[in-house]
Image (cartoon, rainbow, N blue to C red):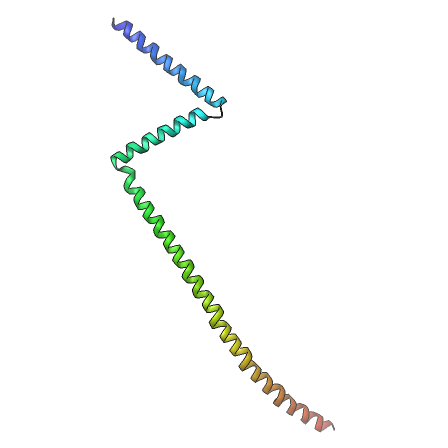
Length: 129
């Protein structure tokens, strides 16, 4: 009786192995659809089992927090730095450059051209003439 049940169980094992091999071969022909489906089911099952045990849950939550924090920080830095740089570039540098170019340089160049060069040219021309 035991030998018959052993024979039957080995027959079942061989049958299962055979169908598994046939399944994997047919899945290779079908572009791996069967194996990928089986793999997805297994991964999902494993994930659920780990979640029940609470293995992945905390890590995932902390990952989400970390990602959210990083995203918020990036958004803050982007907005703050862009705003600050735009304000700085548009306001401060323009004002400085405009003030410098319009006032200081013009005054210097006007003073130089009107006074110094004219005086020099007048002196030079007067000396020549």
